[in-house]
Image (tube, rainbow, N blue to C red):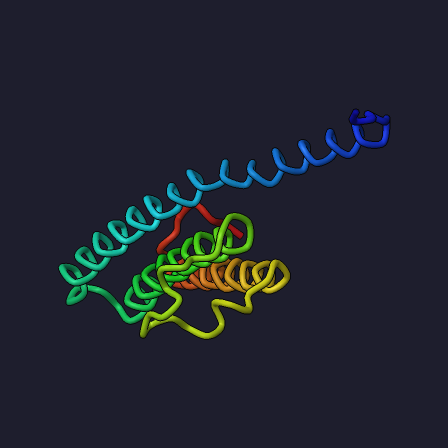
Length: 151
């Protein structure tokens, strides 16, 4: 006869809770799929901005050129940030991306980006995006392109 003790019951409850917690990581997968949709939208915005820039570039001053190029760089950094979050978040919290294991284009650093490295990359990306936005605002103020900002 199997003897049921309080210790066995508590261990079973703990094991069940851990199993549910571990499986709950898959609730994040729709969020990472949504990040890919956001990446596609950022790409669309990038090419839209690029088209506008190409069509008006002959009539722009050098400062306006710089501002337009900074907007394109800003969108590029944003796309990089979204991709970093999608890849690293998926690999850190859900599952390893097995399909890229033997792929020619797989970067070696994909295996070594832990949570701390992910946070550092996000912080650097946010700082770079903020600096570009600040530079754009400065150029717009100094050239008189932004009438909403007064001293």
